[in-house]
Length: 194
Image 1 (cartoon, rainbow, N blue to C red):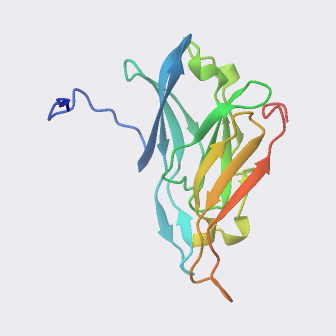
Image 2 (spheres, rainbow, N blue to C red):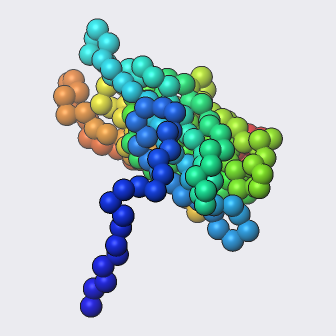
Image 3 (cartoon, rainbow, N blue to C red):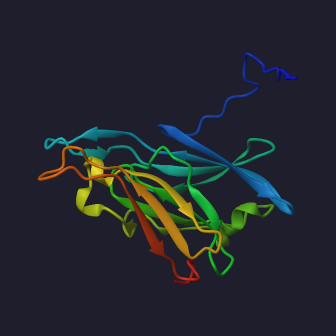
């Protein structure tokens, strides 16, 4: 027996996300926490004179109240060229809520502290860009701008001690094609204090 779920043909409301290429939505919240929606805004890219992909507009992660759509704030990630994939959200081994956001261009992963996002009202003292474009977590930076630097997805182990990153391959790499790879990174217990 199947059941049909009706849907409206017109949205009830429209929210301007304030950036280009919103590529991922993630709803968070749970018992005792406020519902939130994180929107990954990838920014836009272009090719330079050497046909390397470069970010040309800023990327960010915007936060909204999950029940009302109210804008709560934004983590600015500059010219980072975020990937069109869900971030890895979870707890580090010290219990801090964190989020990992991979780049499709730079070969880096960026790290946000999200502890204060679940509070009502939001607690900005417990929010931060811990590793941004100036100090990203390097995975394949030697391939920046090429297909080998495209980090396709991320996952955080339940114990908060291992980050798994999937990277694209490069069929045209010289002298031999480079297959896609998984990278496993051991993490410090406390990502906030290092």
